[in-house]
Image (cartoon, rainbow over the protein chains, first blue to last red):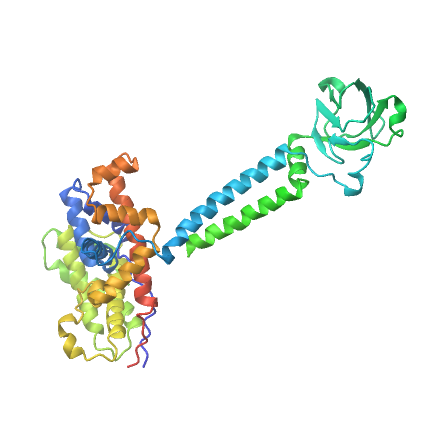
Length: 245
Length: 197
């Protein structure tokens, strides 16, 4: 006949009191509580195991029969877990910073090279969502150009702004009228005008709320930034697994 | 049906020195303890009644020694009985096929602690594994306590804690990890062997 007792371990007979047995170590514990805790340990197999282990381990460690210092293969897990956890945090931080502060990818890759031979916008990139209000546009320099002109128009034809500069960037003032939700197109031309085919160097972009901007940057971050985030996830999973081993 | 009010009255009376009330306590809890033990040990187990008896006596001893009534005396008694059944079961499993005459001094009594069931080598091996299984911070704390015999006040300063109680509590948390490891290995590890009687 097989004994049917399940392979469950000892349980504390009164967990509320059992949680306090550490106070037996504390010389400041009063006599009444000490008496109660000692009685509990005497009656509870789980807590007696706890206390006996303390005594037994102290003796074995002091006698040098077991070492409390030498980590072996089994103890490397927490170390690996910690290193993996730190690496995961760094990877997440780097990927987040990269996504928020580096230019995102173009939404449409075939348009990303628009005007590449002559000039192309580097900021914003094709399809990028920018904050409403002030906005900076920049582009690659065109050899021989003494100045540039940028014309920004709304897709619905309700917005038009033109600015000139002799550098490869220009700032749209906050009062230019870019509004969240609007879709715009910027077209670059040069002085003299024959350095660029008309309308060839252009970029389409949208204005959005800060939330839209962050969402777009996370979605369209450079591939290597996504790879870094994925590496962070894998490292985090490794840390969790090793920690629970 | 257990009369909880009557049980608490009997317990209060027993704690305050009326020994006869102990019979009332035992009588009230006997059926629930019996049910728990009978559910775990087979009908032909010769130790069933001893375990019931030991459990009730241990409860009375606890009441006298602590001077307090557990929040839930019924759960206290039933858990205590189950732990005794586990002790009994575990001891048999460990000693299966061993001539118990030679182990007469180590036969488990109702009061035996779990570690009393293991020999020195088994305890040492399990403790070694338990120490390896915990995190380095805990291992360092226990080493500081056991090996370097640092005072709780020194450890408190080193850990930046506001009270020494925090040190004792942290040590308890670390020890609990080993206790749980030990508990698990005791009943599910390589020392486990199925008993066929």
